[in-house]
Length: 253
Image (cartoon, rainbow, N blue to C red; front, side, top):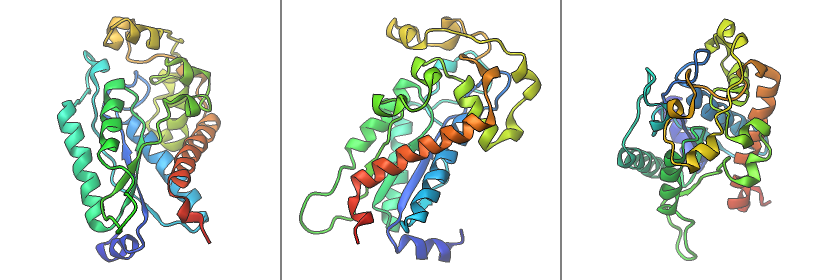
């Protein structure tokens, strides 16, 4: 948008989506910005659904970096320190609030636990306004697809945890940004099971230590664009549902 277009939209107090991803290895078949692609795709689909209801929304430029400690040892991993990520997200939220967006949705696609913990902590600093005079401080929500309510809608591989650059993420990238998929590599990759959740609970802190020798787990060769489109819709439904639950006044007559 141009700044006059942005000015007109901010004047309507839109829902502002902040896509949050990472820059890290995703096997030999997917690019480093997979999580950014997914975060943007789910935000775009959610905005499309909300616009159809007459609810104004916007998508901020994506946050391309996060905490990426589990891919240590593979080239292309760019990680932030926890405090840096928190401050970066805090500044983005505050800046959006200054522009007039008081309803902010964090559309995150990077699933490393420490990264998600930072986002959950940030949300606590931007709660719903208390009754009384109108507050211009942003209210931030985080529809978290790792929570049981939503994880169960995203397929068996996602629920297992062994979904880094596997069927789940590969399908979404095939749907949202197919030009980034190295299809020759994808077709020849065997399934890799590392029992990610159990390994994390055991204190193992990198994919290499877990036995993921090429920075992926799951079954990438089973990925399809059709499944990817369906998954994007489910992720968007999560964002829309939580938004409308949080701000029911948006649908009031």
